[in-house]
Image (cartoon, rainbow, N blue to C red):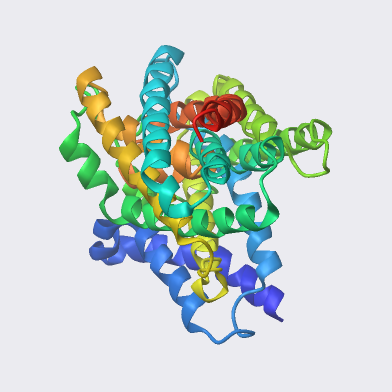
Amino acid sequence: MRLVFTLLYLLLVPFLVMKLSVRYRWIERVSPMTVLYGIGLLVANVLPEGYGVDTKVNNLVSNVAVPLAIPLMLMGCRLAGWHVGKAAKVFATGLTAVLVASVSGYFIFRNSYGDSLGFAQVCAVATGIYTGGIPNMGAIKQAVAMPDETYLYITSYDLIVTGLYLVFIIFLGKTVFRKLLPAKKDDNIQNSNGHDIEKAAERINPFDHEHRRTSLLAILLTLLIAAISYAASLIASSDGSPNMTVLILLLTTLAIGASFLPPMRKQEQSFDIGLYFVYVFCLAVATACDVRQMDLVGSLPILYYLGYIIAASLMVQVVLSRIMKIDGDTVMVSSVALINSPPFVPMAAALLGNKEVVITGITIGLLGYMVGNYIGILIFNLLATVA
């Protein structure tokens, strides 16, 4: 019974919120994503234990939603004006910001931790997380021989600080980044036919007569792309779990290729369907945030250090981006890609109402996956000499 309830909750609530946003404009103003995040947090933290959603089903839906959302959204994007040079420039600012924050934080917090060499391990893993992601975290942990207990503290505290950062992004991110950084002169923050992304709820009827064929084709292509990417990620993995770098890379590459197919060039419904899956993902992520289950008793200097990295790196990246005249939307998406990982990029793009930044954000996240292990291990070896 809980399985059926969980599926209905995760699949129907986002659709209902999207439709209600057409009738109740306050939902559109705060964004359906914000409403869904609030609903998920209430379900996770207010319902008594044993009466909430099925955790396994919730995690499964969360994991499936992103591989479906990314191809659908990319196939609905205009990619002609995108180039890798911009992504590299933005990634350079983000990487520099994380390195400045992680290394300076090491010297600020190592004395309060009491073990300089142990804190160099923490710094290495944290640097890997915020330049790459969770896959880098496990690899660096093994490379620097971090104790399991410390690793558990980092995973618990990372969940807290990145969750708080996500709340900031959802409620204030668009306003803050666009106020602090310049806007692109050619950035209309609209889709190819001039409709605001936030009005997707008014358009998401993929099976009407006009769009039925292209919508079905987009869905079939997405399922095929997701299946191929997932299979390849399993083949490339050594521990039986998907290799996230391979998965995201193939999802992105195949979806970009599919976007140039003639039937895909003249449709926008795939982006709106992908946006629905982003909303499903957001609801599932929020529903998994049960603070009652988090380990809050560990080594507090690690918590302070991780929070410092996020805050300091954000400030450094904003300063560097102002100097390099990078627009606020791109910086926000790159920050989310590095701190929260590439699967959160479509969510950030939807919050901004700017689908043109999806591919840049995902590319930055992929670059982070690729260099995260190298950067983290290098940082450890450097800091170990001064520990």
